[in-house]
Image (cartoon, rainbow, N blue to C red; front, side, top):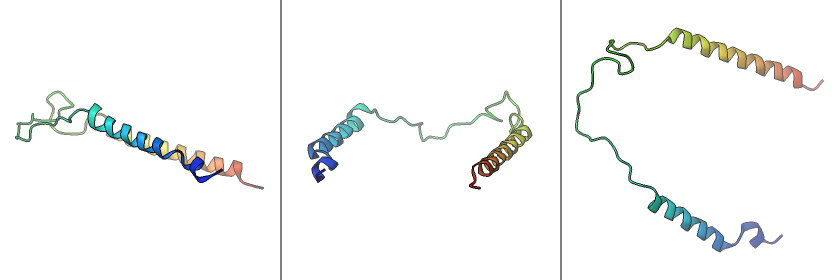
Length: 87
């Protein structure tokens, strides 16, 4: 196989680059952002109805779930290593 066949036709790469540039410049719209002027922020946690800033949900239960997931992942890894080791 010669070098040209491995690399592809140079015109194909140029067309791909041009099509990508057209897509990025023409077809994408401007990104709109929030005004930089300061605005008052509501009091308290916006995820709850009027309660003061605090934990929302059940953070202890979430931490226990993360630890349990880690233990299960470690156990599955150890089991996999022991079952697939060469004897």
